Length: 424
Image (cartoon, rainbow, N blue to C red; front, side):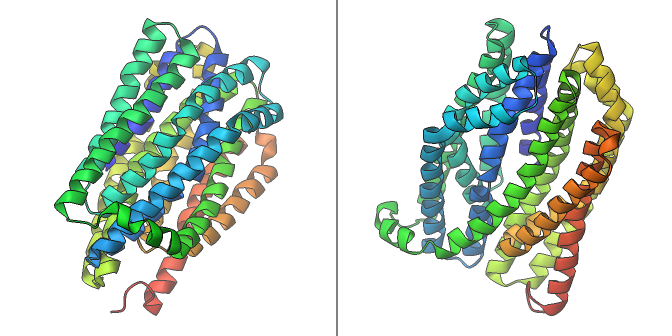
């Protein structure tokens, strides 16, 4: 999962690199703004993957074939329903959001251009959440790995061809992502069909009535994770839009550094995904020893990876910035704020790991509450340190990551002592 996840921020780096070497900073700023809107929308619906992983893993651990099939069908129906709604309202959403942005007219123009094209990937992108979650919940890490790799390699290749070859600029970056999302979706569906056949799961057409009647638990869990995701995206969106208010060079520099943050996030999400699957399976099988083994192994290896990431950013951060953008003013701004990224891996690892534990245990309410507290801390810290300019944004972000981990750690310790995860 780490190997596959790391290609997602690498894709972001390629997006930034092919656009960052064009002649104006507003191309990079526009992609940052437009992709942030898409990310906010899709990540808000990321509960589709999280809830699917946890519920599927528990059904797998309990060896309940019918529930395995029902979780996939329920997730698919919700994903396609949300995709239709998004396509109906995406033009209105674009007009509203960009009218509120403080970015320059050039940045807003290219941001809207990117968003208008990328929006059409919604059906595939949202189905991919369900496909990844279901395959991972069945303890199959290879299929999701190849699914993500195929999606992102196609995206990277088309980025270079469309932007560097065909000179399509921002439109080329957006179109590459659309094609890649549908390619990944097709591959994922083939993997699910193979698993369905190998495990002799019930015929999907016979489950529609039951799937629509038994949505209560699925919807309740999704509601809590959605509210958690809403808080999360509020902070990341604020980073981009507040950075835009500081000028084109700052928003472009933040886009470069956010690409580094995505490397950290997606790398650690690989461990979180593994944790979700293993914890969910242990919960379904009611095996405390299996749960403990999963926790110890994942915490150890995630710490090793975070130490390595910190070393990479400390030693080669300036060189990496130079690879992404050739615009000198953007390079200087990014280098100025790089120390925040050097500290980020070891500070943020805890929130990703505890996310995995609580998703696998399908404890959405606890995740929602701790995220709300961390988000309040983010905005409070930024308001108190706003005089620091862009430094205030990064100080608030690193504090936010820390509070997420601390909040979930406290809840986990209390529930573990009470036996609310698995009784001894």
